[in-house]
Image (cartoon, rainbow, N blue to C red; front, side, top):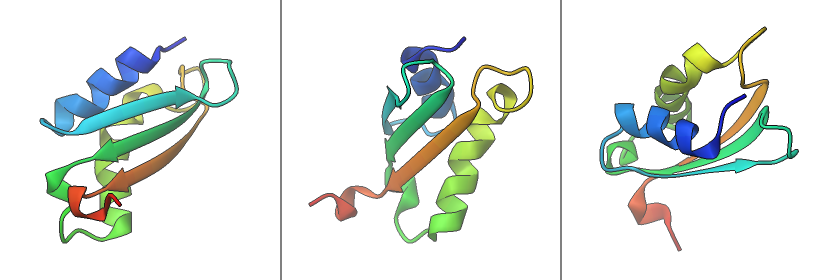
Length: 81
């Protein structure tokens, strides 16, 4: 089992200064939506943004690991409306 706070810590560890929000979408602590807003995403393509976030979560995803599925919404501050 993993908590929202732990997910925030994992992502923030690789993206210092990012604003990270983790939401347990199914109430089972295995399915998550992670919203990340970071200056580092400016000028970066969507796939590269996803890869950067997944790199931080990778140790916790997969068979026998606490995260079964994750939806990632990576945004640059300039994209916030």
